[in-house]
Amino acid sequence: MNSPENPTQIESREKEPTPFATVFIVRHGDTQYKEEFSDPNVEEDLTDKGKGQIQALAERINDEVNLDEKVYVMMSPRIRAKNSTEILEDSLIQKGHKVVKLGGGRPSLSNIKILDKAGADVYKKHEDKEQYLADMAEVLERLKQEGDYYLKSRAGTLENPITENIGEYRNKVKTFSRRIIEIARQRAGDNEKLVLVTHGEWLDTILELYLGHKIKKVEHSADRGEAIKVEILADKLKFNFRGQIIEVEA
Image (cartoon, rainbow, N blue to C red; front, side, top):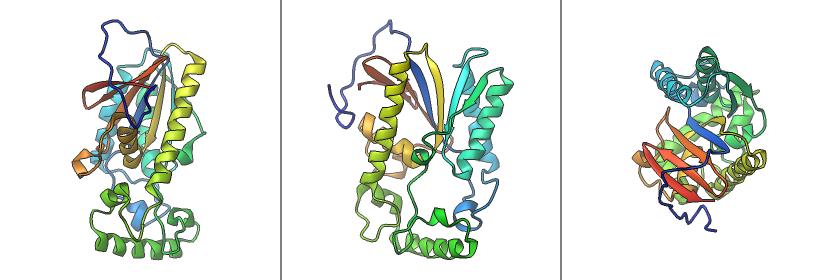
């Protein structure tokens, strides 16, 4: 069996068994990023564009869910993911679907940590707003000096890392993903639906691990309000990203 890092693509067959589960991995909508640099306790961070992106995505997900079918939802604890999840949930409920929130795995769905000079996670300093904002101002200055810090962090070339080690982050995403696949196969459900609302780093890591994508340019990254659809079958995963369907042994 080939590893996700070295995926073997399989030719699609006309007749496929029903998946055990379908997972929609969602990147939050467009945001003002107030949470990062101006207010750690902001309650709304999506722009009108971002809300529209998630509403449009919700309509597409609704089309794949049967009436009265349960939809399981997990989300990152970050405010932009929470705001996006609320829109998705409201849309699903309005269409007559049953939404079941799952709490496990929330830290795993968070984006890469932002680190202060000492290597501590700035996001964990919400209780001390003054310190949080001071640290974020210092991080912002380092970001300006680095240039293309996100791409550099993915390549592991930052000498003075602003974010957590990319290898550790990839392992976190890999472990969580494998657990989801394992649970779906153990349950052997009739195409159960799961929505994971998270961040661009998470989707980009999935693209790297399972589809062999290399995030070398900004346009290679998953867009805000975009989703990766994954169907979990007994011996493979069927991905749909930007209309391209790829099957991977896993």
